[in-house]
Image (tube, rainbow, N blue to C red; front, top):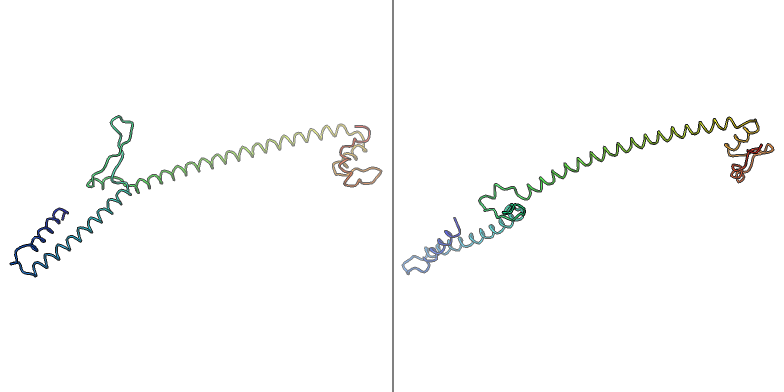
Length: 190
């Protein structure tokens, strides 16, 4: 029953109350009770309709946005209540947005993992290249050193410097003297 029909019925029931005295009292009481019940129901319906409008607004199904006549601006267009069931609501839109964002995050994570893998492979390749270069330089240094050492005494001095001590007169130098020994020239003035 619409609100207008209900209001008309309440008015007719109330008119029985003001009718001539030939209406029985029980009919008057029944009409008054029925009118009060209808008014209470109308108030409850109005309250529920207000809550419904509030919920529809929160779900964003009372309106949508369409392009304006110039095709550049979005303008709000109200959706009639009878057409609201055909429109996606705010929750559906939010869920679709979340799903799209999750797909984007997954794509970016995959790209990050690929880039990290490339970086790690490049770092390993660079480390291997530098180790090979250092090894080649060490071999060259050893070859040059082997050619320069001309006596057993020179070899003994080089071995002692590498070991961290310097043999002089068949005695080891103290640790404090080791640093100084590294800067000393070998015997025979090299």
